[in-house]
Length: 69
Image (cartoon, rainbow, N blue to C red; front, side, top):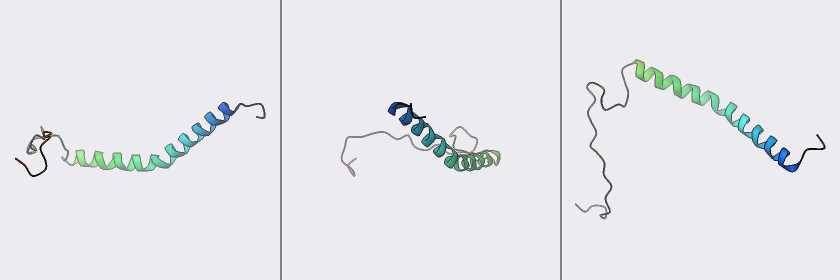
């Protein structure tokens, strides 16, 4: 490995970092997916078209100062 260029070493380090972060976050992502799946299976969700789900008011952007009509 003594003949690798600085670019090769940089890319190897970047790939290693991405693999490490992916491994560290995999458990949290899997847990979040399981919670979401459980919520959907239990009939929950956030779709406004779901039966019995009230629609939230449509939000609009305004350039008026806060508190003005």
